Amino acid sequence: MEALYWIVGFVILLVIEALTYNLATIWFAIACIPVIIIASTTSVSLPWQLLIFACLSALLLFLTRPLVKKLKKKKNINSMVGKNVMVVSDLSKTTVGQVKTHNGVIWNAIPEMNETIEAQTPCVITAVEGNTLTVKKAVGNL
Image (cartoon, rainbow, N blue to C red; front, top):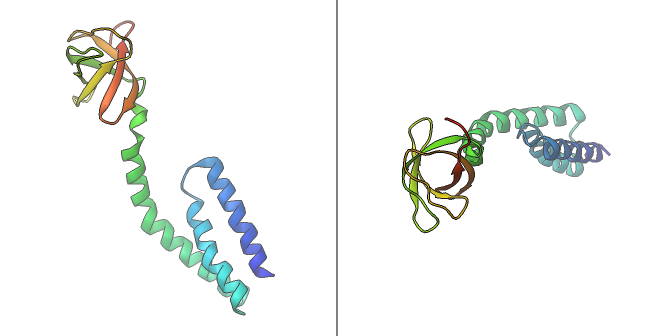
């Protein structure tokens, strides 16, 4: 019967994770799995199950969350969309040019429309595909 409670807890934690995407409750959901197995195959008492759950949760949280946060930041390249850049070398649909971000990083870029954008033109990033930014001319100044 205790295994059923752990299964319900597991499902609730997964639903919370699916709704929030914070990578916070996933560690507790994963910790439920061994406890479900223990509760369904042995006669370990509830206090021991809770202790196992707490230890596994803490271990998973403290060992893996910093790594996942680091990987998540690296993959969040789409956060560049909407940022301003300055064209460094001319770009067109047939020629990949270069743009410079506010922090000085040079990126390959192509225009959003079938147009040529000359160097020193302020632009806005509209998409990121691989290592190439898609940009359009900015309205107003950088």
